[in-house]
Image (cartoon, rainbow, N blue to C red; front, side, top):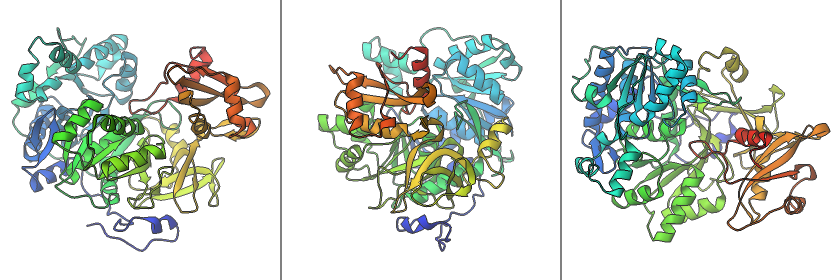
Length: 581
C-alpha cells in the first residue's frame, strides 16, 4: 500500500504534489512478469488487449505467456539469456516480452525498421542468442548476418512473427481477398512472398512453436527483482547507441511511481491507447507495464495512425492516452475537422519534446480531461517526473520529480556544486528507477553515474518560482558562440512564430574565432519564401545579438526519431556535409 510520509527538507518540491500523491513508494519486491500474473488473478475476464478488433482477456493472455515461456525454454532460453525482440506493437510483442521476463531472460528491445547496419551493431553488442522478429524484419537481419558473420557465433535461433495471426478471424480471411485495400493492409503487416533464409541460424515460426506448446511448469524458477530485465538502447548523453541496463526493480518501481502520480486512476476500468512503440522506453512503461498493473485494457496500434485512433475511439473509447506532441496536435485537428468527439480521455501524458501551450489548451477542451507534460530519459526507466495532475500543471515545464526521487541542479563544470534556485544548471537525479549502467561500457557509465547513485542527465534545467522545473536545453546541444551560451530550443521557439516557418531546428556550426555560430534548418510553410535577412530582422526583435542565426538552410523535412523527436545531430551532419542546402 502506498503511503505518504513527511517531506524531507531536501525536497521542497514535495509541497507542490497533487493531493493524494505519496511522497514515497515502497521498494519493489516483485519481478516484472508478476505484474501480468496478478492482473490475471484479479481481472481474469477483463480484456487485457484489443488489436484491430480482437480482444484477449487477462486469463488468456497469461496462458499465452505461459506457453510461450515453455516454448522459449525448450529452445534453450533460460535465466540470463539475451533475447532480442524486434517487433511493432502487436499482441505477440506483449507475449514475447512477458514470457522472456518469466524465465529471467534479459530482453533487448530493437526497432523493427532498423537497417542491416543498425541490427548488426546492436545484436553484436548485446550478444543475443535468440531473436523474436517481425517477418518483414528478417531481410535486414539476414543482410546483417551476411555483413557480420560473427553474429552467428552467438545468435542461434530466430522466431519469425506474422502479425496477421493476431487479427480477428474474419479479418484474416478478408486479407486473402484480391482487393486493393486488403492487399495494401496485408503488405503493411506481413511478408508477401517467400520467407527469407538466415545464414547459419535456425528459423522457426513463432505462431507454430507457441500455439502447441504446453504451459510452463510452476517449478521453473523465475528472476529476482535485482536481476537485469532489459537492455534498452539509447543515444544517452553522448549520441552513440548503448544498452541501458534496467533491472526488474527499476521497471516495476517506475511503473508504480507513474500509477501513483496519476490521481484518480481507476483499477479495472481504464483503457490505454498504445500508439507509442513498445520498443521505446516511453511506450514500454506507459503502454506495456502500467496497464496490467491497474487491470487496464490496452488498445494496441501497430503504428500511429490518426484514422485508426479516431476509429477506435468510437467503439472502445480511450481513458488514458500517452503520446508525443505531434500525436496530440494531429488528433485534435483531425477530430475537430471531422466532427469526432474525443471526450472520455480523462488523462493524457506527453513526453519526449516540448509541446505548445495552445495545443494543450485545445486538447483539454476537446477531451474535457487533463494533459500533463512529463520528463525522463531511458536511463531512468524512463520517467523522472512530471507536472502534477492538478491546476498547478504548466505545459512549459517538465514538472516535479516522482515519489522516492531526489533531484539536484548543479554546475555542469563542477557537479559537486549545487546552484541556487533560478539559476540554470545540469539536472542530477537519484531514485529506484535509475539504471545500473551501460552494457559493456564502464567508462561511459562512470561519466554519467556517480558512485552514490546520482545520474547526470545532461539536461540543463532551472527551477521556476512556483517550484516546477523548466527544461532549458540539452547540455551537449548548447551552442557556445563568442563565449556566450546559446540554447537552441529558445531560438526555435521564437523562429516558429514566423508565418513562413513550418518547422525548424537550430544547431551550432564551426564559426572561426567565435567557436560556433548559430545555423537554422527550416521547413517552409506551403508557398512561402524566406531569406536569411528576414530571419535576422525577426531575431533582432526577439533574441540576443549572438543568438541570431547566421546561416539559413531550407530543407524538405527534418530527421526525427521513431517518436518524433528532432535529431539535431543528424541535422548538423547534413549541414556540415552540404546535404541540407
